[in-house]
Image (cartoon, rainbow, N blue to C red; front, side, top):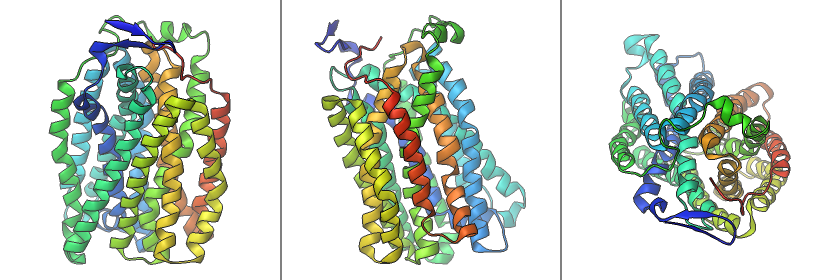
Length: 431
């Protein structure tokens, strides 16, 4: 049974998502950010274990470079898995991405160090990041498409915002585990094996996710009925690549700022000389702020529209980035260490909820997953994946501790350009 709301939204009772379906959809995204956060926590240790160098900062640089390698596989994953989701359905694509995530995480969790197997050790880490990058490139498209396609009338942004909420929850959980591990284990035990525990725990969640995804309903086109990519893009009368470009631009600010915030752990340890336990606690607080901001942003986007909820926080983020890092570097206190990432997280989470909604609403069903996957993968690869490496390199070359602020400002400028050019989609009906 279908009903049409006053705003033109088509609602099907069989597609109203249960809580289990929402959890099934966002669990992969949560694991992505959990894995990223854990890797960021222990990047220095991983660098020493797998990437020997002549200095601690050099090992850290090699470690974050290996993480960035995974982003190179994202565009390919976005194209291959995104198109697979549009042709075969959201469900099989989501099962595939989660299975690939399991393989990558298992390699990292159990890979022998450089001291045991030599150059094969960093090779395994790079292989794991490539597998995970391919999976993550194809994860956002089908899962977010599923959420907006299954949402009740007037609640598409609230449902889609759970993608961002899951990121915050993942960061919060990863932070909790990181604090407990750091507080419970000696530095020697942490270096030897303790850093592997969070990866093993993340791996243990994947079977639950696979079971949930096997039991979810399908919202995409029936397998074999979707038109070819050329025919589907032709139906948009030349607007497809324009939409992909604008979607990529609006993802950049949240992608860069999220990764800068997660990088705060290494930043605080290396430059501000805070203890690891306190630095990881900052990341926990960032996760909590992202949850609150995303839920609020989703509700506001359903009420006032997507564009205003994207533009206002993004503009504020651009304005406060530089003074925030000036404060962080001028006053080395716990207050500033917590306050700066909190402000960035609140502004990022609120506008990201609208961003993750407007993109799938911009594309027709037969291109929805592909369009979002490609846009997200490009933004994450070119900007998100390079964040840790670029910021670390800038800090090393220039010695300027304000480098992260300049990166955020540039990202926001690109995002605001795309946000002003995209059409409002709150009242648009989905096919």
